[in-house]
Length: 114
Length: 109
Image (cartoon, rainbow over the protein chains, first blue to last red):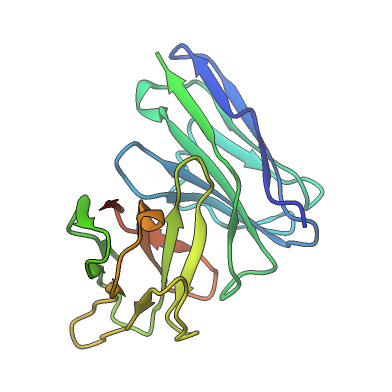
């Protein structure tokens, strides 16, 4: 079974630029999560999708972050414009469904904003 | 706010010594608790969850509601246990995980 795929693996941008991350979940997984992990901290949920609908985006900074999962499969997370404090690893995870299903994580995208 | 606390950033032990990684949570309902592990150059993966009550790679964790704790234990540490360990809770029906800050376990030969 192929795991969660993410790209790019690394990205360096200057502040005020925009950036996009892509995630391809495990086939058949209805639920997709984006987490932000700042150095020295645990992952923090940014947004959760159930198929192509948003379940929770309470911690997504909506003035600069956006995410979509148009066909209920792949997802894109965008930051525009980026700030220095956005430097982090962005993790995508997927699960069969919401609730008590195991979450499977991708390798993450390491973003550095200079 | 719901919170998961791992008080130790780094735990260093010798091979064969017992290990206990501490985790405390703040949810007052019936949370579901997990331990996730990230080995060097690998992705974050589930180690164990309290509802399964099983031992994985020799690790066990017991949910103590009175102390709101979910400490991870192993009687004899191995060098291959060296990794970053995260405690997490699922406090609702959505699957949203709240993670602690993580503890680096270093097992010395």
